[in-house]
Image 1 (cartoon, protein in one colour):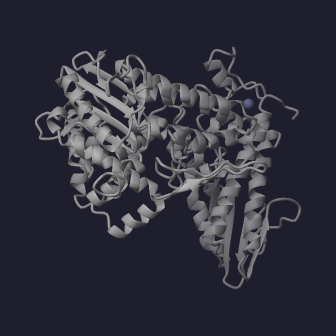
Image 2 (cartoon, helix red, strand yellow):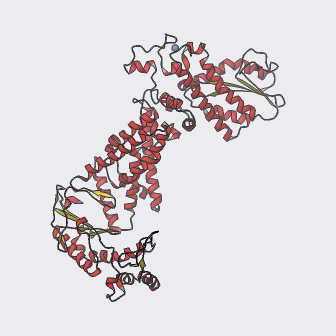
Image 3 (cartoon, protein in one colour):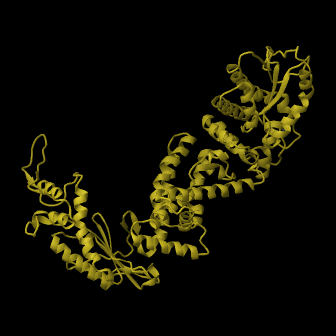
Length: 623
Ligand SMILES: [Zn+2]
């Protein structure tokens, strides 16, 4: 818009007096308010209510010790009066209409019949001319209106500038109003409707300000004495909403947002969540159903806000606004370098859903942005050779249960499992990889590399110390408790958790000890349940191994005339539950969906707590 004209001229001013009422008693109608209301065809009843309100009103100030005499209220609208906004806008609209009568002086939107010469919001006026001379003419018109209405402009608070379209340099246009020079904006910044206008370098200045604001907010949160999770919550509910406005009104490159703003936020979020520096950040921003913490990403937030903005502009009821937005759309289409095209996203949605409302359009556009962002983060995670392991192997729905459970575990366990999920914990294999330790070998068995898999599932010393059994039994006890509480009539059960365990030998004589046996002599049915806490990449292998181990026993029970089901339940050592085992269990015992879900969460929680304990004693044989 700027580049097409050598000179653009812009002036903003505030009004000193809102307006006077009594001064205009000599107008053909009663006063300025009455004139304006009648001019815009307000009902006469409304006019007479306003007239009675604004006639002869006075006020006094009372304290305990003294009071003033009656002070007649002669100028201004009455603040606190709900009608005052309507009255003010009606009066000021006479100025807008007067200036708009001179469209030839305004800034013309190229190749259209639209021109802009005034932008008015409440008592903020911005005149826009196509040259300093045209702007002076608009000011002369304004001056005439001021004289007619009895209003005054606060000239020292006004600003004027003109700028060279080709370079963006600002030049003093030497404008006057009521015989006084209007101050030159120069390198100062003014705000119009909250949008800082800094002619020499609006974009650089706004980048600096938004980054400063983010850093100062994050630093405040960083210093307060609350828990890790509370800090993340404050980021989500307190910091991000404070950036909504600047991220809506300014247009930055998405690369800048990603590299400067999001990178800054990520640094703090990693620190607060305890995620290792080397960890991929996707876990912070992915939704819970993908195993993430679902924190707002500033890049995604920016994209969503820009789509909302474009949806508003492209569907505006003001044809001039629509036309400007369409220019923006065309510029986006023609630009080869721009990666993120909010107007194009909105246009595409409009084409797909022609009868969609603005609200529907906004939400469809925003959803498209979010979907695209998640896909791109997921593909990054899945392409990581080591860090994506857990998410890669997770089955539908499991990651969501896991992510929901994270809110219920203590902070140390939480920090542990976040890093375990992406294999960024400081075990010897990683420390060796990071150049911090000479040997990657496990100090317990002194044979194998101390990898995460080795620590959590494969160290024979830890196995002999029954550390894995302890974790297994912790989870099994919870499963057994839930089953017993919900056991249908006619069923009997025994669990391998101590001396009370007794396998019903009349089904088949055996010294094998499946983790849990459920049987019903009336319906002649038996379920053998085996629980494993495998490492996620070895999940299916673990289930197969168990099946082979109990194959013969299952055949023998079947031989005694009982319908036999062999059920394996797996909760991975990093906490992901295998949903299919739980859903079979639900059918066999007749558990409700709610009970099954809470059982999955509880077993996830216990598996993580158990694994954390094993992790803590990874270098020590005694603990
Ligand atoms: Zn070992």
